[in-house]
Length: 285
Length: 288
Image 1 (spheres, rainbow over the protein chains, first blue to last red):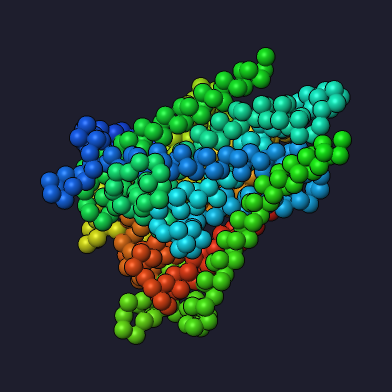
Image 2 (cartoon, each protein chain N blue to C red):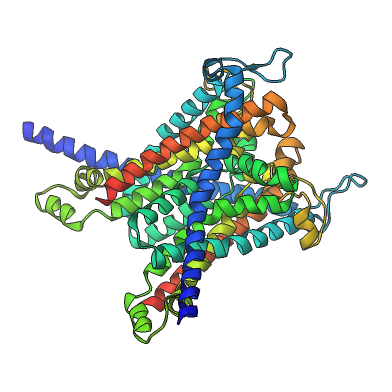
């Protein structure tokens, strides 16, 4: 009798937990599927060539997102250009040059702290640090994003530097190369995959960022060239989505932008997996 | 030879500088927040500021009490954790232990996709699906409020919780599980009584990471929470979080009002630093 009860209890625990697990997984998958389909279905019909190729005009009361697309490209370009040398350099210092353990742990702690700070605080500090001196402009937004993405680039580069075999370095030193020569010719070529992965992740983060840009890059919709564009205020796609949805109630345009962002997110995830797989294969050979 | 030595030292110095940039950034951010956040707290008085229950920054006799924001942030985060952690945890156990490799890799891309969706997109869907849904289901005049924010946050923290828990569960030594299975425990019993306790520091870190994400989220919450500076008395109350309090008034604020916003950011920053410390504590234990 007692044994039966015990067995029953075990059995029901098993069934019950399994049911909850399937439910949780199903819920997560269904949620993502719903989000994806809902946004694509609501958004794709609103993506017209006219929307993509024009700028908003008060005269014709039509909305175009060309300036926002351009601004997004400029800000991605400027941020990556600045953050890459900084992040890669920091990673090289940590894995190649740093000798004191304390220094390494301080720098790593700082990088972790940076990646934990919410974007609204970046926005605020970016406003104080950059926008108050150079005006609200894309460049101020890009500089804010540089600080935000520094830990990402650092981490991915560091991880790929760790996979460069120690024997390569020793071989190069043995041939009489100096430290800098070893870093330049052996270490840096080995971290290409980390840098590319870091770039992809950063682009994803920049595309999705809104809170940090609202107060640093502003939300103007003017079509500019690269240099003028960086010196002028402008909205990225994400910021434009927020402004159109929350302040102006233009849900059609908002959904069109959301669909574009969703497709870009899919593309970025796909690219990241592809890059990782490519380099994993090459490494195993 | 001398010239070479000089070059090497010079380059070492440059890399050292690059390495120290992160430290400099953290110090700079902390310094700027403290310097711009302290004056308003002094002017308003720390007690009045932190425990005042009324926020009326544009009224003639302005009142700057941020207790409603603090409580809303705490309640909102707690609610998101209560909903998000069980779902994320169960999903993680399934993915790490029970799922076949194909399902696992498919679900991992699904989770990465969820992690990559911009927060304003969550806000947009929340505004148009969740808020009207809550209004209809619960028969309340306006669906935008604490509950909507909690649900959006719960969804947004799912990927961090799942990813980190899966990593922790994957790292549990196979021998532990084998021993338990050999003693006659079923697989499910083994996973919950052996693997999960063995990975508990990592799972705790996942929860803390989720807390950090939830408390720092601004734009998605701004679009669904209603943004009235009320005390969070009920789930359907229109509320303002610490993050949305800063984001909402920043663009048109000036003087003491703006300084008070910086003080709110300082309070938020202190919360985050505390959470980071907790996260580091759990991660360190996980490594041991």
